[in-house]
Image 1 (cartoon, rainbow, N blue to C red):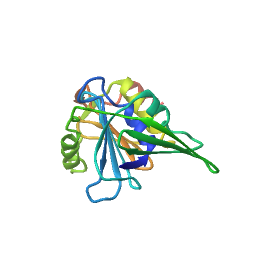
Image 2: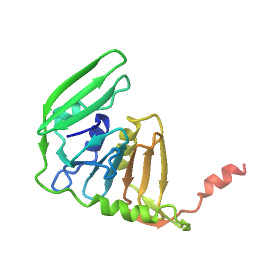
Image 3: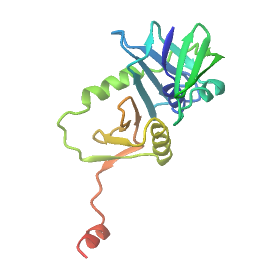
Length: 203
């Protein structure tokens, strides 16, 4: 059994790829027994990672995001979403101030092991925050940025951005529970300020 914030599952679906091993969402209980991780990635250009500290579980679930499941987990401004998976059934709940509605949906588990997102995140964790000069910027696909902003915005009203030297851009919810890593198309030297900006500033 595993239970967590259903909205995180719906947002993770936005970052799945089309083909194995990228088409699934990984729901992984924290080994220390507190909380549940939610992870997904396409073929290495985008990666989503979230953590629900109130989540509970005793086994990892590799879940294929079906339309019915995502519809019943999609974040709402006026209600909270929950999901509990037991066997091959998901109980998706929508809770408002006064009521809670629950829908049971059959789930499909992936027969293929997920990609090694843990390994990629380990490299990022070992590098991030080190005292390194930033001399290279990244060129990022505008459609990926738009997708990340839209998805993270559904979990809160604003985002925090930072990036590694010439590397992935980190877009994070202000709640700190979810983030998207966007890999650059290329690394390039940080461009000089444009002449027109300098002239405007001195006009």
